[in-house]
Length: 265
Ligand SMILES: *Cc1c(COP(=O)(O)O)cnc(C)c1O
Image (cartoon, rainbow, N blue to C red; front, side, top):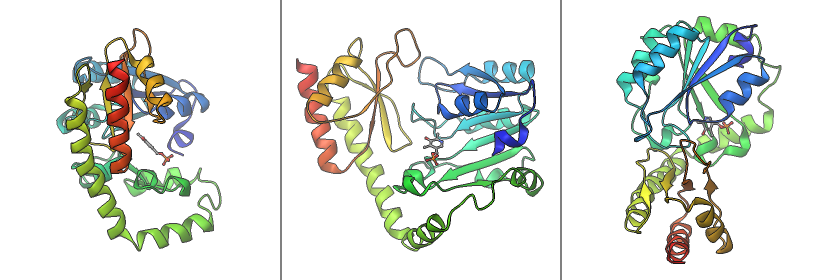
């Protein structure tokens, strides 16, 4: 809806990369130009100077910042995101899809910046099938975006299900707390395996690198009944990288066993 609202010939959408692939896909589908600014190779931080320079050059209508980022799992430095919001001539969407697993948010900054929108979803709370999210921002912007909203875009089954689920907010909260605790344990177990480099995560998944062996590890895990995400592309920023979602404790244990086995091959 944000992209439909701003879409016009020669407008540009900008995002750091690697990030959520839908920003690029939806921008191109809406006929917009898309510019990606590489994250720093070491640790996937925002390259502040490069991003600000790209904003000056391309004057993007919308900048997307996934906070925490997917698929790298890290939270960017808040000061860098703020610098982007201040210098952007158009909208900045801070996408907080993984907010339940992170200790930081830009929701409180909404009154401060006239060009900031904050997006969230119930998907990562285990309710992905509902197809429900929220967009918060300055009323003047929301009124414009509301004009492109399809009639009855949130169906009544979703409305009723969401109302029901949110009545059990405490259960959802306990689940996310559990996932965060299990994430710590999972990352520690992964870090103990030789040949595995684990990246910090503020999300419900963990990015890791296995030099020269990503596809072999992916296939080895799959043959052992564990399916994760292979992000490897030769020469790309995620070369040798895989992403595993934090599962139930027994699933995490099965993953660690399978990973240990596969790497011993
Ligand atoms: C999962 C995800 C979303 C939203 O997904 P929906 O299921 O469409 O709500 C948005 N942004 C990021 C970065 C995500 O990972």
